[in-house]
Length: 198
Image 1 (cartoon, rainbow, N blue to C red):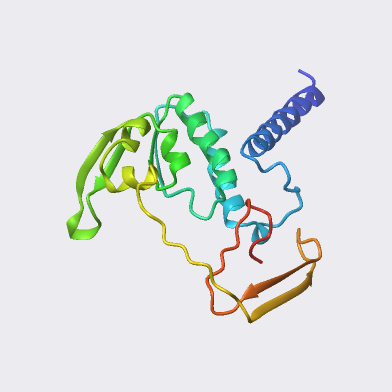
Image 2 (image 1 turned 90 degrees about the vertical axis):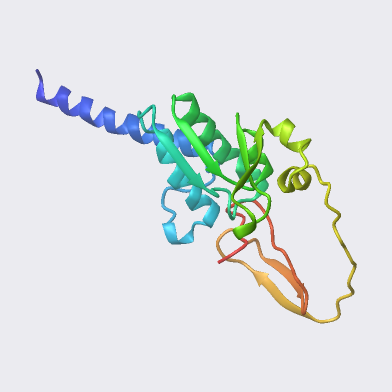
C-alpha cells in the first residue's frame, strides 16, 4: 500500500472527527464561538455545554449517565442545547438520570420521580412518580410550583441612587451604558455568551 495514501487516510479520519465535534457544538447552540477563544473567557453555560457535548460524540451505548443540576447558570434559551444532548444520549441506547429543577429539562423526561415533601429530615420520600403532565396536576410542592399555583409577591420600588457603567466595550459588549439601582436586587439575564459576567 502506498505510504502517502495511508497518511492521507489517517489525516482524513482526524479531520472527520474534528468536523463531527464541531457539528455537535453547533447543534447545542455554540456555533457563535470562535476556535481561537480561550477557555477562561467562556461563560459557565458555554463551558457546561462543551463538557456535556463530548458524550454525544462517544460511540458508547447502554451506559448510565447521571447529571446533577446541569442547567445551573443557563439561560432558558440555552436549555434547548442541553436537552438535545440528553435526548441524543437516550437515542443512542443509554439511560440518563438528571437531578434537576428547571421545568424545560423536567418536561423532556419520560419518567419523573419527585422527592419531598420538604427538604432535610422532613424529606426523603417519593411524593410523585409519572409524566410531566401528571406532575402538573399533582398536589406536590414541585407540581404546584410548575403549574404556578404559588402566589408571587411583587412590589414596585422607586430608585434614586445608581451605580453607573458607561461605554463598556469588552468581549462581546457593544459600547453599552447601564445604571444599576443601589440598595436593590438586580438580575442580569441573557443567553450564555451574551457577556453578563467578565
